Length: 127
Image (tube, rainbow, N blue to C red; front, side):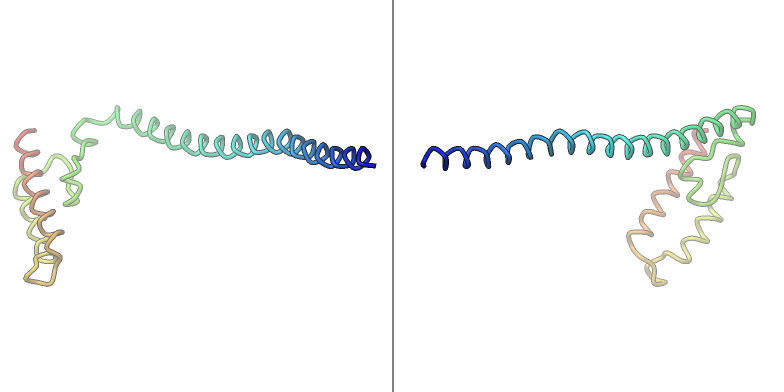
């Protein structure tokens, strides 16, 4: 009697182990395919961005350097090369009117604007 009970117990345990094994055999490759599809879609999105940048780079090579090159600090003031110190000063003054702490602006943004203004002047003098 106890032998029959032991056989039934082993059959239940064996069935459970077989079910776990089959779930792993089916679930792991299925999860791999899902992650593959997700990764391929991300790769294609990145590839599209790279191709746009590459095309932009090729188009930019045909233009003069000053027409393409716009340093970040000048872009902050909506300026591009070539520009003068007067242009930078005018753009700085317009932004200061909005960002100055005495006029209700944020102190951190004002200090960041001052740093960008000094960097823009340095950039202009270096070029």
